[in-house]
Length: 203
Ligand SMILES: Cc1cc2nc3c(=O)[nH]c(=O)nc-3n(C[C@H](O)[C@H](O)[C@H](O)COP(=O)(O)O)c2cc1C
Image (cartoon, rainbow, N blue to C red; front, side, top):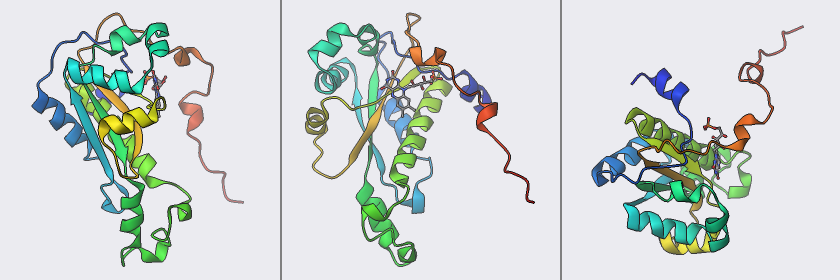
């Protein structure tokens, strides 16, 4: 598939058929997504994968609660994802990298508070977008889900004892026709063209 085609036809798909995916294919897809650049080549972005219905069920048990599961019209389709990658970002790796001699003059190695822009967040987004595009390229459906509920339970499930930030989750699987597109799509907002502008001419 052409890159432009993958880019323009990709949509978040929030319902899956439950068809099993080969574990190696899943791991390769998430590993390939890490071709996304990282600042200073810090490589502070990583994935924890959960593959197959039993592991996907464990993800939802930790990341959501009973109220959400019984009220969400999307849960039924989401829980039939074939695999989930949970994207982690390590701010400490970035701080360490920017404390190395070739970058020390940036001052960013001193503390995380010194960072006006937390590059690890941008890099995590780039890796997630890579995974979404690679899924599209494979003819699979995929969606990004925030991981802001039950943070502690999720940290325990993933066995995180470091300062890693859980950026969010990418679900992949064969897309079901019975999808629930986001209500956000119909909200009024600026067009893509309006979001690209030329700098003011110099006087
Ligand atoms: C950082 C980020 C967080 C998002 N969180 C969620 C989420 O928690 N649940 C969800 O259903 N969609 C989530 N989305 C998907 C957006 O709603 C979606 O990308 C947007 O509505 C545009 O739709 P499209 O990707 O299908 O073009 C998120 C997207 C991004 C980039």
